[in-house]
Image (cartoon, rainbow, N blue to C red; front, top):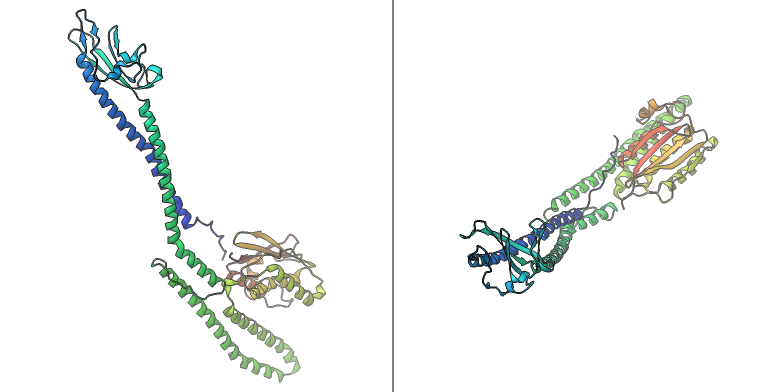
Amino acid sequence: MAIKSPAKPLPSLRSRLLIAAAVWLLAIALAAGYLVPQFIKSYLVDQEKQQLYIYMDELTAQTEVDSNGKLIQPRILSNPRFQQPYSGLYWTLKVTDQELRSRSLWDTRITGNEKKGFHGPNNQSLLVISRQFYLPEIDEPVQLSIAANQDHLLHTITKLTHGLWLMLATMVGGILLLIWAQVSWSLWPLKKLQARLKDVREGNATELTGNYPAEIRPVVDDLNALLFHYQELLDRARNHAGNLSHALKTPIAILNNEVANLPESQQQKLSPLLQQLQQHIDYHLGRARMAGAANILAAKTTPSARVDAISMAMDKVYASREVILVNELDSDLAVAVEKRDLDEIIGNVIENGYKWSNSLIRVHLADETPRTLAIIVEDDGPGIPVDNFDSVLKRGVRLDETTPGTGLGLNIASELAHSYRGKLTLGKSALGGLKVTLTLPKPRQ
């Protein structure tokens, strides 16, 4: 079964919570920073207009026409600023070709329009209200406009907006700091759980200990139950291996004694088979006992050192073949595989190369990801037909019955690699022979 490549890790819970809080706070702060000044400006402008309407009613009541049908300058209004030049409070009366202006306008006029804004003396920004009304003596409507300098109002709104933004920035920063503290405190049990899991992975503990919140406690209990079940299975496998070893000793001993009494020709035929049977039994029982004692979670081995050790052994066993093994693996590379298991995995593959290569075996790193690395063992031998790649990985399958072996080597290597969530794949080597790719997990940091 192919092992899926690990998915890209998601952002941490702390990051996701802080990002979500920051987005919402910034959205609220931006909306408040824009809308609140608009509401305040609208309120202040309405208040100013209400005052101007009072002056408009007063001016309308005082507007008169003389005997010639001309407008008469109204009497002095209640606010003396209408008499002070450039005071910021102005009025104009227009009818046909006649125009009267407040003394405060002096020698200037109100210019502009509602779209671009109104301006008065010294380029003052004006707030203007207008009204048309009729007098009995004049057929044309009288246009009355009253204006007030709104520079001070705009300046007040600008100061208020700056203060509001400063207050909002302080508030957002303070709330984010508070949320960060709250999130850190809330996630502290998960950090504690991670530390306890690391202790279990490194073999320093057999279960998760400590007090946890109600939301995490069921997870801790399930993990402890799983760890207990895992340890029970290992202990049970070791006990069964011991029992099986004792159960097989007597029959094997009896068979050996019986064979010893047979003629020499029959002994030569049966003795190797019994020895091979004993070797297989010892090998698999040894593996079962080893699996029961090994701490897979804390496993860490350097492939380069094991390749060198295996190569030295194989050079003696297959000295007559004069095969050269080139180890190109870095000495600091490590895999999360128990030492003896890695020896079985890579040893079987290398031994297969010693059996079939012409003169050269090459071991090198093919690929590396944050969680796995791929080791290639290739040779310059005859190789294996592509159609037989799947079959040679099956238990006991041998393509050449004339070469010594059991047909278990590549099968054992493949099954062991799979037990560590790795895989073994076959391909054609650039050297001309077989290329075996071992994908194995890297130790967790």
